Amino acid sequence: MKQRVWFADVLRIVAIIMVILIHIISKDTHRYDLGTYQWQFMNLLNGISRICVPLLFMVSGMFFLDPKKELEPKTMYTKYIWRLVRAFLFWSIIYVFMSRFRQPDQPIVDEVDRTMLEIVQGYFHLWFLYRLTEVYIMTPFLRPLTRDKQLALYFLLVSFVVGILIPTINQFPVRSTATVVDNGLNVDITLGYAGYFMAGYVLNQVQLKKNWRYGIYLLGLGGFAVTIIGTAIRSMQDGVMYSLFYEYLTPNVFFAAIATFVWFKYAMEPIELSDRVKKTIIHFSKYSFGIYLIHVLVRDLIWDRGLNTTFATPVLSIPTMVIFVGTVSYVLIWVLMRIWKVITTKWRKVTNNKLETQ
Image (cartoon, rainbow, N blue to C red; front, side, top):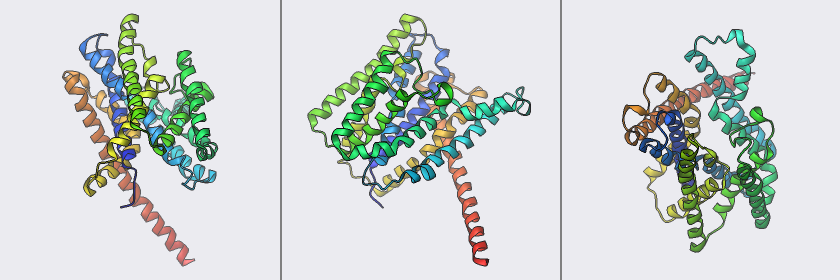
């Protein structure tokens, strides 16, 4: 089995679980009054899980920015960006048609323009593909910086100030999940995610002394505390949900994500994984992207049938729904990928046979 960075695969799986957790909680938070234990529990889980998207960018950055990895700009477009475009178009169309299916009073044929606009905009969670594409486009510019440690750290500092600190001080006139379709080109937002991209590479390459690691852990704990406690206090003061601290491009989420990345890296270093565990990690890491794409569809269809987190106390219902939605999403993606593999295999055979007979 080829050498892998195991903590990266584990982080990817953990991040996807957190994404599902956020989307399940966000669907039902409004059902509970501010300050109740149910709301506080949801806020706790939601706040902890806000590191999910930063972790996904960091894991990607630690590989794509590695100067030892041969990666031409052409390859970025023809392989990686094209993969994101295909995935976005396919799933955006699926979500638009499912939305019409769930709301049959909105015909597709009579509203072609609106339907096309919805496809281009994408369902709410597909914003991630837009932002990831933007960072991929920047990758050929970022890779040369990684050859010089000082330049890499300088870029990380600039991206933190411009893409994370300043937008937070300005209280995000534009959401950190907004895309070019939503609000035009927001270079500061893109730079913030590129900062996570660079942070993943830098933190994977450097060997931090214990004192530095403990300092990062303290900053991370502070970040989690600000996200959770700050959201609770400000929400109850305002009488409505206050979500600034939930934004992915805020200092509190930044430090929490950095600390989590570092902790997983060093915690897993001395662990010797069995072959069985390695195969399991690889398996679920492989399907994580597909699970991200389909899980909202599973969630919405389940909620339409009245199954949500209110069937029991959130302490029990939320973990149950996360497991249920995650499992169904995994099974569906596994089936779809198997079907796709069969189709592509047969297509290659047909193509090769035609070439041989010519």
